[in-house]
Image 1 (cartoon, one colour):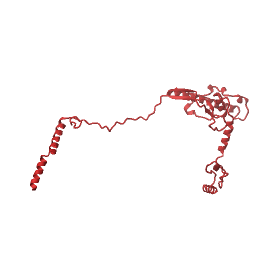
Image 2 (cartoon, rainbow, N blue to C red; image 1 turned 45 degrees about the horizontal axis):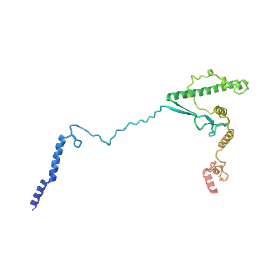
Image 3 (cartoon, rainbow, N blue to C red; image 1 turned 90 degrees about the vertical axis):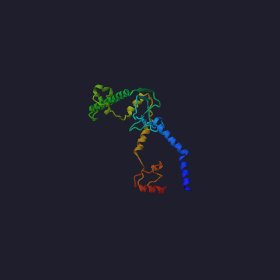
Image 4 (cartoon, rainbow, N blue to C red; image 1 turned 180 degrees about the horizontal axis):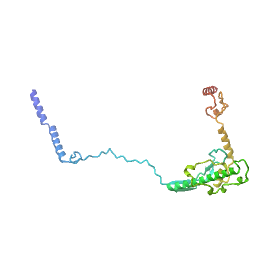
Length: 251
């Protein structure tokens, strides 16, 4: 019985349509692969390697920033009310809107900056020369000299200044302007009336900055401590632990 079943299974397996179809497909694929060069079964003779759509060439990113021009906005001077100079009043500021605009190329802007720096350096050297002459006439301020009192910057000529042998970039630096010069700049910009109350306000601010902290020593009294009244932590000079403990107890 087993022999009959085995024979029938072998006959069915040998005559199976699936097997014949698979074998025929293999034959077709083999023949097509030998004769055809399509995308499914490419010919080995062409050596064609398809490029992957997932691989993209990375673009070279340049991180350099290039500028081609400089735009300069010019503002007229006004009394500032926003800064605290070391002395005097008449603070410098500017108007809310610009009065002119100018565009430069990079080369033109560099030349303009050098010209302005040379002018500022010339004025600075003239002031130094004037002060030197006054000290020489008054023997370092020990004697009176009417001629020294009458000297002005107009008496100092450009021939007395050696600007050609001076490196502008190395010598140029910003300097604080005295009150007299700040007033002159404001008047030259069209400011007819300078607020004199600003001078008193600035003096009060400078005095308040000289006194920093409170007068607490051994313990802090929140009712008299200026720091506590201002809503900040006590800055009195004492042991930190003792001060914090007394402050918490009195609260």
